Length: 244
Image 1 (cartoon, rainbow, N blue to C red):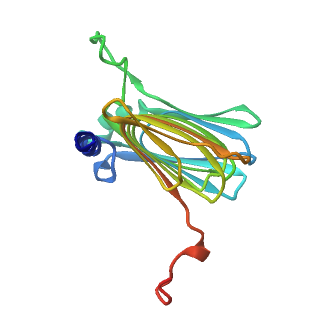
Image 2 (cartoon, rainbow, N blue to C red; image 1 turned 135 degrees about the horizontal axis):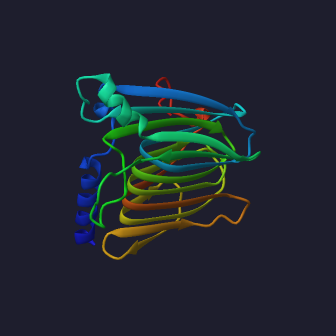
Image 3 (cartoon, rainbow, N blue to C red; image 1 turned 180 degrees about the vertical axis):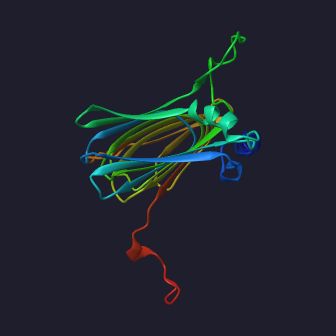
């Protein structure tokens, strides 16, 4: 058990130190675009192909607002004319697939030339991405993320989130939840009670079944961590005056 704990800690530290997209990587040139789409509560929002930092927050408006910032990780070249094609090669497109479904897709740039089989035919082209998305609180989310951080807060609908490497963090409002969270290399940490099962040497699966009508959380991570936190109501937050 001690050996496994050391391995998991090492993997978690390695995942953090790998080149994920962070605030310190935002260097000129960069471009930010914001789009707002009318969208009724209770619908399904699919986020496909995102990478870097993805933040999804629930709000009380019948609309989805998407703000995407793209920046060259290593400072770019001397002229904007040379840098702009790199930024434009990563495309984020919003499309309404039905009255109750919205899709936010990220398309990476294509590699040129012949590459070995273990290389993907797509590349970020040296462009980092940061997404800030606001959705109606009771939206259902389906997230397919690459490398980076996924944070979801204040959303009460079902959540499916998958990522290759990085971290998934959920901030959940009070409610009933059924959870199926699995990570191949790393750990699952949850404020909610449930059953944890160690898998192989470095992986873990965490499950919780709520018999009452519940929201479904289906989480999958390859390498990194999964964290599930409860949002404490303001009435229960300790105050400096009482210390309670």
